[in-house]
Image (cartoon, rainbow, N blue to C red):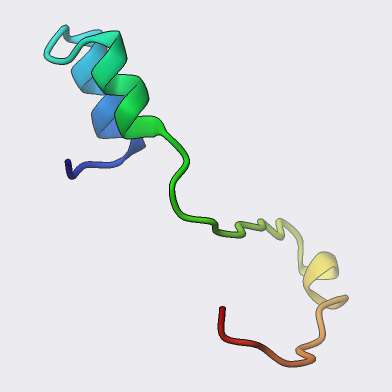
Length: 54
């Protein structure tokens, strides 16, 4: 399939793929965690306590 979210949306809005194909490409497939810390103060609260392989 290839391409990311923005590519898929662009292809859909330019009518190069239909709604069904766009939804298939945007389907949530692989779990991930994304967090955004926007201030220096928020970074001061972070402490590394370990990791685990999933």
